[in-house]
Image 1 (cartoon, helix red, strand yellow):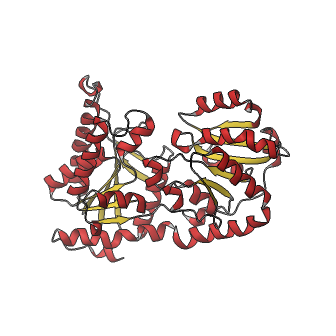
Image 2: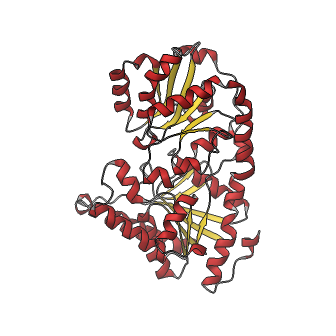
Length: 412
């Protein structure tokens, strides 16, 4: 089985997108399949037309540099034309059995055109809808003309693909509601490589002191600072939390578009000395920062993106045996069992967040049970081997639907 994946971006960039990609590619290789990988011009750090990173070979697509591509709307068109041209070239070279396009739809549409030209079946994996991501980025609003047009493009791609994959039941329900046959949609859940995660260790006291956290109870978030993550809500809850626990501190590890706004908010609330911003830290050192945290917080705001899409971070936290509190958006409810593997609170409600955190802090005797249940959940239900195994039947269905014989490796 030869699968050519069409990706938005890849390593060496670090994101939830690239980590999921690597995990799935690794599992497909373990099934005995050959995988090939093409990134779009949105991969902003290519070294040339081809690149090998950590043993993984990528075909790159150069950015369009014409004046036309810089005009509103034409940039996306130029991007798709570039992906289509490069994909056609690579597909002719590697002769894949399946083209596997991953979000966004800007990858799916070129793949469909190339698939039609070369007679190769195309599957489309939806990790989030492009129109909803644009709402969070502030480049459009829900219900706008651009939003509706983008939604139509997504639906068009979903209908034309031979099979659709997605990451969670929330997105699957939305896809089926668009008129896509339920048997054509397979969930490949977010998961973790359980062998890569060990239960949390003792905090590095020197690091803790250096960050001004000695003797403190630490409420933490480690990741990218996007608006939908709800870190503003976490800061809004801090004055209430400090009334009950003056030694409570917030540790924010990472960075992103909201960093400046969060620092300004901390100043306005008079809690700047209670919030520690570390900036981005090397990936190899992240576990030392996790070890400083007593309770991890995932206060995502409620919007279509967070209601439909499951994140990776809470799964990674459970794999490490961490105690966590999270908003009750749909993406979290699909992962976290309230009171069993974590504590949920009403999304958008700073008072409810504060109450949930205080409840956890006052019930430390429950923490071993919460930690063990979370670890057990990811071991049994959210491992990458089980998730990627779902490709086998779907790929076989796609090839059979085209009247093509499944390669022997498909049943490996």
